[in-house]
Image (cartoon, rainbow, N blue to C red):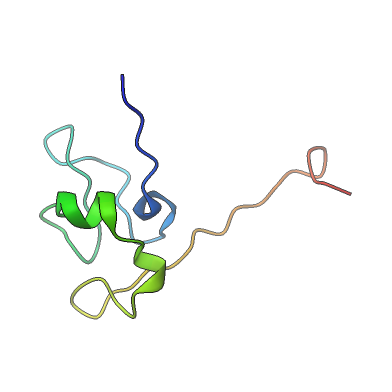
Length: 69
C-alpha cells in the first residue's frame, strides 16, 4: 500500500468526499484535481489554483491535553 500526503488535503476548499470513490476534488477543481497538480505542486505557493480559488489552510485546534507547553 502506498500512502500519499498531498498538500491539498490540508486545504479548506478540499472536498471530503472522493469522486467515484477514488478521485479527490475541491472548489477549484470540482470535476477532480488533476493528478500532476495533486502530487507535484504545493498549492500554498500559488496565488490561486483555478477559477480564482486558492489554498486556504484548515484551522486545526489542538486539545489542551496534547498541546506543547
